[in-house]
Image 1 (cartoon, rainbow, N blue to C red):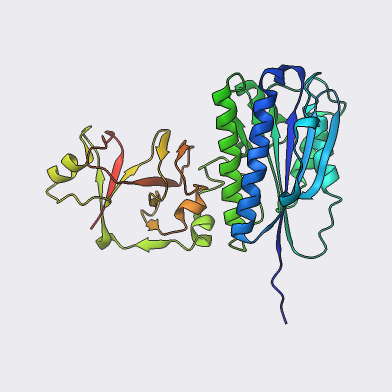
Image 2: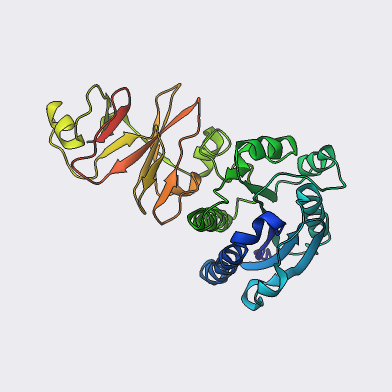
Length: 336
């Protein structure tokens, strides 16, 4: 008899508590605690076991909570006092080496780590190539993401071996920035856990991206998306900045709400449950289905997305209004 493997997520948060974090430390702690509360709820909803590890780092690295059931975590406030410099490399290496000792004999285990920092490396004993070698040799069920404060820090994170699509910039100077980074972590974790529920997903190097690492032929096939026949839709080149209903009617069609899908070419807010269509550029095949949002890491909530460069696929988003202004030079799919 084959026994279904229990889905066990080991999620780590590695939090910078260097001196520059002092003005935002209380807010960051609240973000972490809110994230843990959310994980507890989602773990029950998705029937997954989630275990949390928390590290804090400045000049040195300290593990304050190790692989604890998400339903039983204490407050983090007593552990997070800011002061010192930024040993980012050491913190990442220690977190991953510690987690390697986690027992994984039975069950479907996967590891997801978020590194949150407001500055650049300036204290570690370990060298960048040591971290890069560690990250490069990790198995497919390990995912490590970095949230950094600026483009320079993003460049450094890439040099340290973080996958480019697992790096995201956050505004470390404002309260709104802390709130937004909390939403980014929650969104990414929710997408990760939802994907884990499919039984085929174990990790990703494209946690924050719609590029080729997330949207590719293999991903479309794995998501079991439906290919639309050419008799099921029209594809138009948009040539005027008209509202969608006016533009569709100018083509001699009757506009039906929800039948138009605009090409995603700039950062946009995508509302919950809006359907997605993807089109393969080379062969022109068009795909859609209930798993399209999941494939693109879109949660069932409003989210701001950026259309990273993808040479093989275009993404189209359902319009549920009559006055969305179309962008000349893009395309529009209208379902028949």
